[in-house]
Length: 109
Image (tube, rainbow, N blue to C red; front, side):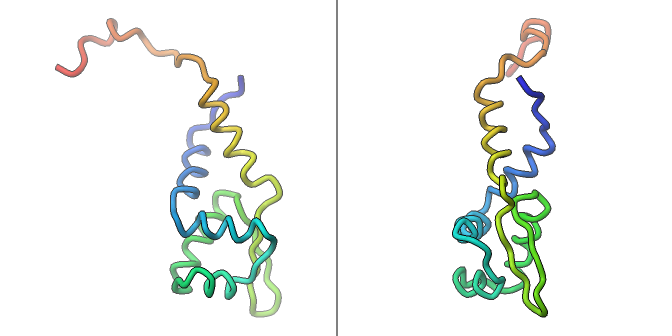
């Protein structure tokens, strides 16, 4: 079993935890898109879209390129593979090395 990088998992799932960001990823599944196309399709303000694109980029899910005054975004080649691997690691993880509850004392009261 591989070691689960909790900070990395948190970053990825934070990026995936918003409707707008998921809509962006879905649109980019069809290939590279100009920011203006994303903005029109999603009907969001440029500043709000920029924020969401930054979250996705910081999480390593998308990359961008400039062409003159236009910015284009695309999914990273294996963008969602890491999220899949994290889910798989969580689903197949054995018990965490923590003391038994009796050693921790009585909980909830």
